Image 1 (cartoon, one colour):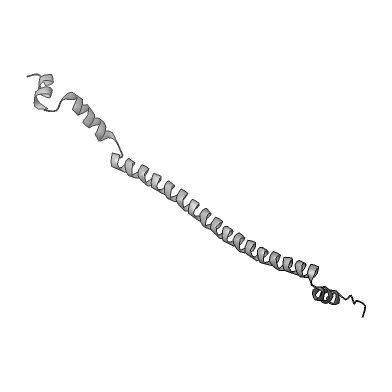
Image 2 (cartoon, rainbow, N blue to C red):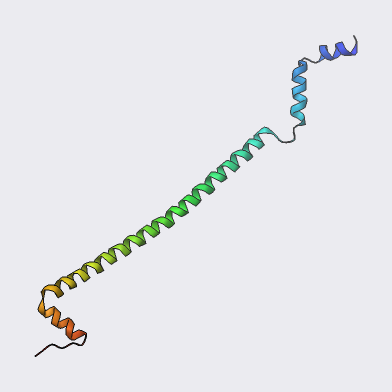
Amino acid sequence: MNKVANIYWNNPQPLSMRKRAKKNAKSATPQWFVFTVVASLTFMLCLAINLRAFSEMSQETEQFEQLNFDINRLNNENMLIQQDINSLKTDKDAIEREARRIGLTGPK
């Protein structure tokens, strides 16, 4: 037989599969490696985004607690001042006490 016939008769793989085998043999990086790299990069990106969101949330929670503490403290101070105002409007002893405290003396 001639050379062409020997190629077709001796090699059981079809010509299209031989071409694919040659193409796959030429690739330098295996497909699983590319997939692993892409999956790893995606995982790291998601992890970085979640860690940043978590740190921002914890900072905002801390700030929220501090603001609530300040609001409660200022509300307590406001109530005490309102009680002082009410007592100064109605109680003569409180008026005299405050007058003496700031240095004013009334008629004796």
